[in-house]
Each structure stands twice: as C-alpha cells, then as structure tokens.
Length: 470
Image 1 (cartoon, rainbow, N blue to C red):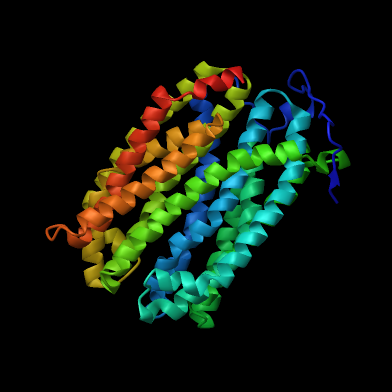
Image 2: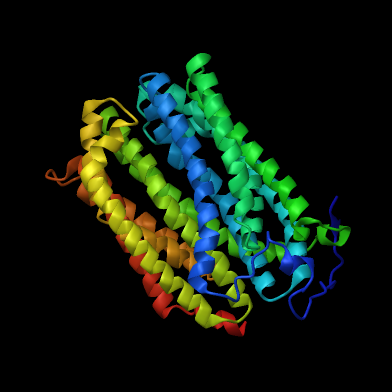
C-alpha cells in the first residue's frame, strides 16, 4: 500500500552515478557517454522491432477482419481508430511525463528519485487508466453519432470501441512500464513481450473471427488480451532484471511534488496527443462523408502509414531518452549532436519509402482489401502522402528531443498546430471541386509539413537551453 510522505520530507540524492549493480546491469543504458549515433541506433532497433510487432498484430486484426469480418467490419474498425488514440492519449502523456522525469534523474545520478518516481507512477496509472476506461465506454454511442459514422457500420463500430477503449486501463499499465524501462535505456524487454503478444493475438484473431465468427468483437478481445500479456510480462521481467523496479516501502510513499511534476509534464503531452487525435477524428468525419470506398481506402492507407511511422516513432523515443539523460547530465552538445544525426537517418528512410509508395502503392493496398475502387483510391493516396514523409520524420525527432529536455509548453503548441492544419486544410481542400476527396490525403501531408517546420523552429529558437540552468 502507499504511505503519504510527511510534508517537508526530502528524498536522499546521490552525488554521482551509482557504480554498483545499476550501472553494470545490461538492462540499463547510460546514454550520457559514448558515440551518439551508435547509442541511438542500438536503442532504436529493439524498440522498432517491438513497435513492428505491435503493428503486426494490429494488421492481423485488419487482415482477418477484412477477409472474414463481414462487409462493413473493416470500415467499422477504421472509423474507431482515431477515437481509440484520443482516449489513450492521457495515459500515453502521463507515462511520457514520468519517463522524462526518470531519464533526467538517471542522467543526473539521482537514484533515489528514480525509484520514488517509479513508485508514484503506480497510482498515476491506476487513476488515469480507470477514468479513461469508464468515460469511453459510457459515452461511446454518443461520440460515434457525432462523427456521422455510416449507419451500416454503427453497430460494429460501437462494439469494437467499447471493448478496446474499455481496456484503456490496461493500455495505461503497458505504456507506463514501457516508458519507465525505456527511460532507463532498456528497449529490449518491451520487445520480448510484444513478440509474444503478437503471436497470441494472431492465433486468437483466427480463432475468434474466422472460426467462431465473432467479427469485430473477437478482434477487439484478441487485441486487449494480447496487450495484457505484454504488460504483465514487462512488469515481471522488469522487476527480475532491473533493480530500479525493486521498490522498498519508502519509494511507495505518495510524494505530491513528484506527482505534480509528472502532471505538469504529462498533461501537456497528453493534450498534445488528444489534440492530434481530435484533429484526426475531425478529418475522419470528413472522410466518412465520401462513402464506404473512400473510407476503406483511407483506413487501409492509415494502417500502412502506421507501419511507415514506426522507425520515426522509435527513433523519436530514443532521442527523447537520449536528450533526457544528457540534459540531466548538463551535456548540451550531446543533445544537439544526437538530434541532428537523427535527421540524417530520417532523410534516408523517407526517400526509400517514397519510392516504395510510387511503384508499389496499389499492390500494398490490395493485400488488405479486394475492393477494386478502394485499391485504386488508396494507391494514389499513398503517393500523395509519400512526398511528405520527411516532414513526418522531423516531427518525431524534434518532438522527441524537446519532450526529453522537458519543454512541456511546446507539446501543447505542437498539438494545436496539427488541429489547425487538419481542420483548416480539410475545410479548404475538399471544397475545391478539382481536389475533392483527395483533400483528405493532402490534408494529412500538409499538416505534417506545418507541424514539422514548427518543431524545427522551436528547436532553433526555443528557450529549451535554459533547462541547463534550472
């Protein structure tokens, strides 16, 4: 149980890095020394594989629902995707806030504060996760009605949303333990259990959707069960292999200073995610108005681009951990060097992905649906957005870096930028007859460009360097 710390109690802080178990543990990585690019790549690869596993079992849902989940199953799942992210956003933001604190304390050599922050993250996870689960289930029908979900998709969309969003507290738990482990430089443990979860999810998908005929409900149950396995496995292995997670009673005392700081960092990040999700939901409403063929094509494109984004997202998280540890250690030059070297990686990958989409767009779309019109629309959609992948990569790298140094204010600004972009561009572009439905794809592409440039400007002219004197 938690014990409340007495007012005025102070946490004992070490003056330098602990030279025993912690620094020699292979599951803990000190990113304040050594080659920046090598450290970033070493950290990114396991996390990328883990994220790809996660996307693989999401795609398994998609493929199996598309083939065996009924005529409207795919469209129903697609229309709920942005809503899922909206309700997950607070959990993801709070987990990211805790991760930033832990990485900075670790970089500064404050082992006791690391463990106190981990201890207080438990109550944050429980409160936020349960609140989001309850709200999403109670208001699911009203929210879907506001989105103008096509009537033929409504029943299945409602079922899928209530099951997946109802498990938000499980998502909160997994994101928190993953954020903690990654802040300490461990990107391998989440990989191991996402791999296990991927296998379980695919097997359960085939059983519940194809064999038992449960449709989207079966896919949702399989996803939630797999997420639970990944969460429990990461916690158990984390405690076994990482001494930072072996907490004593004093580490579980509720510390209001830690909770308030985690909230100050996490809420802007959560609002950023919520605003991005809101902008995606607003655009989804526009997409829905063009009918089932466009909805299916847009949904498939979105799933494919989730895969494209995984290297960007993994690298961005690596940059965030790298920046957090080095800003804690007062090593500004390493922060800047690591960030700029990451941009080079983004440029190379973006160029490769653009070529892939130009020549193989329709072939990739046809893997997920056999609807000829949706394949034709989706192929062109991928070519439109593919031209702007570099800007998407810039968002992840610079946002990760700014989050890592604790520039919480920009998180909110960046979220607002995406709202303005998606709502503004969509309103203008789809109203132009020569553009019409293609405005949905151009909206995403131009929003990436707008948000990417905002991140670069914040990096160049922002006051984040002041963190060194705080």
